[in-house]
Length: 437
Image (tube, rainbow, N blue to C red):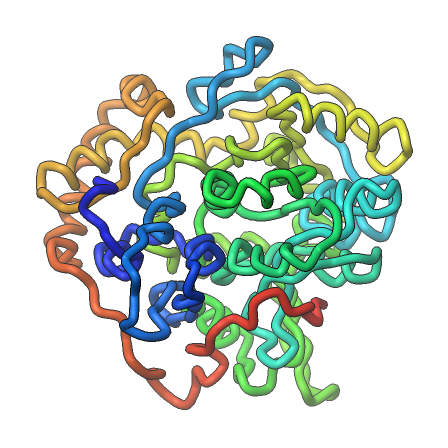
């Protein structure tokens, strides 16, 4: 399918874009920018029509094609079908109590970044932070200190394009640690093929587990449930400060009282129901292209006052070295756990993978452009699904094709929809340090 697209705007029109931002960074003419569309997500748009048709934006796109990494000879065979290459499974948390408390699930990602900074392994951490001008929007940031890492703790359930900040690495003298969603790490790996100098600067790639990116419309609906006007928001935290963490909103009016939403209310009832379309066709939810990936150990019951724990998957030899050294140096407190903890913790992600063959089959029958996936064992996973899941994966997709008009290319909105959403529709200031809460 990749051959159908000559420019990234065609990828967007056929709903295959994941919003990672890699195309923005590799465009030799700097002719792309990321724009956050309220009901769609963060998408690349052409700055001008003066495109040289070099094709780099399409070659780097993980939305139209993914090939699974080659399996390591010492991978855990019982996990490879559903979760990709995994060498070790750990569970634990950041040794720093503040990092553990502020992180979404134990602070292990932040602790790995702190280890890299303190032990002089990296010059900084490329990650997502909050726009200082628009506290409801995410931007790529380059954190160089513990304080900057702390400001970026907690999940950001809104469109994010970490790879859009890769250009600033050309001014970095040394290596960096990359933190992103699975699709963003996949975009990073593809960018390495076009920009080998970026690969030499990537000391470690860390992925968080991802069940899909919520659109900005979902954030507005969450604020509506809290009876908060978007214009009054000074800071927004989706998770963290305990496990799994409540939604916390700071307004510009200190005396304004707001109700809180639990994680299960915010994600389960609102945010997960307004996800990006391309996320419904994502086979890569746990960071198979990363060196280390981290997520919630949902097999554990949530207890009052829990500061948080993470599942940590070591996926490469480089990742193994970093994790072991971070434990030895006192940055992480981890214990090896049985590999079965992973499927017991992420049953929804496993079911999504089992449904994927049927979803893609329906799209191909309808002759609609769809992503190409190689090496992800989609048919084997589909065979393991129940008959009900098999039927649902095909019939549900046909229903969406019909009622959502997926057989036609999509046109992006040209302006904001109303005054209530003036936070949205602005381009990302690539690489600017965010004022994260």
